Amino acid sequence: MKIMTSIRMFVALALASIVMTVTAQDDRFANVTIETVPVSGSISMLIGSGGNIGVSAGNDGILIIDDQYAPLATKIKAALEALGSDTPKFLLNTHFHGDHTGSNADFGAASIIVAHENVRSRLVAEDSPALALPVVTFDDNVTLHFNGEDITLIHMPNGHTDTDSVVMFEGSNVVHMGDHFFNGAFPFIDLANGGTVQGYLRNLEKALSWIADDTAVIPGHGPLGDKDALLSFYNVVKDTSIAIRVKKSQRMSKEEIVAAGLGDEYASWGQGFINEQRWIETVFDSYPR
Ligand SMILES: [Zn+2]
Image (cartoon, rainbow, N blue to C red; front, side, top):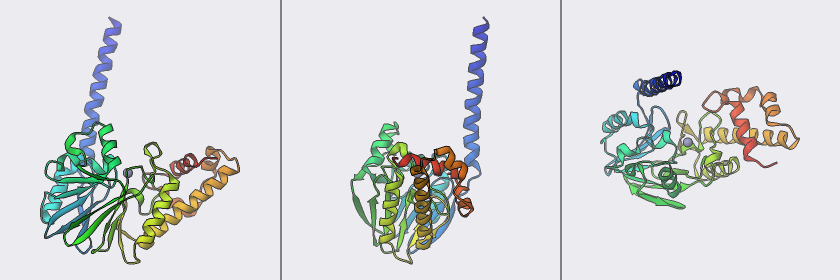
């Protein structure tokens, strides 16, 4: 009898916490507004909650890059309507993370989803609904000819994850970096899903070699940037990685390196999603001894 009572109480508490979690999630998005930032040419950027959305709006219609979280789909569509249409012809995913693909199922019935083949396989592995899956996939790169310019997705192997691409808008002189750019913050590198710090740095070097001094650079997270901002980010990732690796090679433990810290000059970079400790741990774990 006592056991039954405690089981019932446990179930009641568990249900209550599920209800609270759902409410908290709804609340989390209730106050989010979608801000539209003009970038260059026919390209805009939408800022809400989750990964920044890129938009191409023109005579051919609307193409978007990434779509944040499902509870924001209605607000995203309202922002797109103001740019011409709430129904994109194409939806490109920079990678598979839920803060970039969360609204895929809301767009998938009317929009053609394009992404690297590993985006599809990882979304399939997560039991995502069929409507959320990319229907056009590629291995190395693919170009769309839309709104009067070439829009090219280029795979960035084993960087942020093993599913990433950057998107180059040739005519508008814009690149969407996905999560290969956290503007002003240490990056999240998803070692559990094929990401590596080594690949991340290589990918950044490639992207920096492709873009011009005046190319507008949309980050996965943070404010709109340019080549200088991307270069600063690259230098921080590179310099702190080297510092952490040197300490590791001197047989310092992860805890000792965290305790020693990276120095005041990097304090602002640890204010985002990834604090200094997590960044040190990521680099430590990404490199063999
Ligand atoms: Zn991500």
